[in-house]
Image (cartoon, rainbow, N blue to C red; front, top):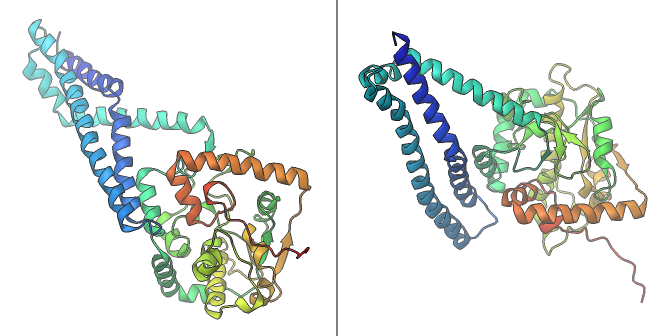
Length: 392
């Protein structure tokens, strides 16, 4: 068969390896194994779980890991065996000695070429998968490694404060150079149209907002931006609400509720979110928030210095702070969105059912929304404790 014979047999061996690897389901099993490791680490870093719950979760992850390791091992062994089939057949038929075929399989140039083609095929498959679109849940947008990083970033109040303090020290001069301009707050009851307002306003030259790319280290946005770079690899897709709005990593999002929970944890106890009064003012929280707002201004406008730029907040829970916001941020702007009541109520109910289903199906969606303080729907629902008239 000539000099090309060992190459053809080696190609057949690689093709057999790839075919068995795919048909045996090794890739999804390995992905599931990675998810198991991630689930164990995430549970250990979950500050909402007690020690007994963490131990139970880690034990379950360990047992799943042992079972998963066996599933990976026999599938990989079978894939390797598939490489030998064409080599042995060619040898038995007297076409190519097995030593020549195995020698070709072990050559550096052949390995490099096969690896390059495999990477190219994987990239093309990923491109096709991304182009297919679909709804983004907070789980589908995160891989196993990203979930572990998220769990680390939100492992507790101490972590959030420590990251913020590190950001303050590393970028003190940059933060100090940003003028302390009054922020603008967009608020309403959930489903009141605040996201549409945010999307309409965030591109204004005088506005600076949080974006999805600021996750998960949102208390250290300047430092995280240095490591994350200009990430924009997530294709634009419909968000988890299923309301037709699309998002990407550069889309604006509401994240500052994390800091209200950090400084006023007492307002979130008892299954409701309490109302803030002017007397609830905390100077340290005011300084923290103002400094954070300047960080976002600096991040979104790195070359303009932030002159005349205002931090733009979209936060539904700010409707509980209407008495406090002007006291903490004099001259701030407050935009209160209103929606036709019947349509508003129907939308609230629809999203409550939507996220109740998502929370039941995916523990990370529940964890993600709890961490960022989106408590409007589903298993996390905490209504705002508005004062009611005494009708007696």
